[in-house]
Image (cartoon, rainbow, N blue to C red):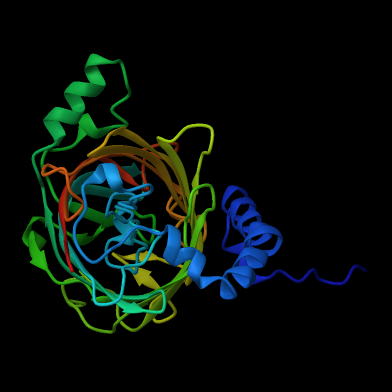
Length: 379
């Protein structure tokens, strides 16, 4: 008789693509980055000689690698909305006493229908992310959110788009439009429990999130930027309205930004990590697991001295536990296309405009969405 195999719960939380890239990041850290980090400890004056000054806003033509980063967005999958989510953004950290404020608004339409459950509605988020440079390559962040749930207005637009291009409606046309509904048939007897309905439309406060980021390597010319970020979801928020989950949650991510040396207008972002939410077993009525892996991968294109375009893939292992409510347990795959634009031609404030689209699994992620944000830096 064979002895039972031991499964590592951390490795089991990652799908093969996520695990592969995260392991690749570790190899890069060991083989390339750590030697450079050790060397830089004995050559801080090299950074001082080449890094651009950061005391005041600068014309963008003077900046080699201005790290605006990716869109200030986390996953918009329905089951991730009340939970701790990784929010993309910069890899670099702010200089000591430098402050950045990001005010963003996003709205996404969600649709998922199976014989024993239905998810239908639109989710909106106002987020205020503030960051403070602490010095010594450390940065502190705080995220405050106001979240909304409604029947929405995007159903006609999405269904018209699907009809125009011959895309299946996935049974969306068989139900009322612009309706908020999460309902589950737990006993498979045709009797649905309504988790969220039209009476639950409105706004609530998810849990605040504290982050601490440390820049391990500063990007100079061809050298990559590398940082590690720890995030903690605080045990506050509207749990009664199901805008927040109870208890604490933590996440840890390693972010890499690599310039492509052949051209001076292209950089690659890779962020991998995990999220651990131990204090709850259900989210919006669905059984959920504690550990998830996450991966963000994509390029940044500099299209002008004051504008960049980003196109990236946000991949997370599913929040659902078990296959009873498939595909909630499967990976979510969101593609995000965005423009970051500095209207004044300087780096002190930036406008973000973005689109959100789900792929591969049609029932566990956002169907379609919009994003708008304003970033401002104060020195």
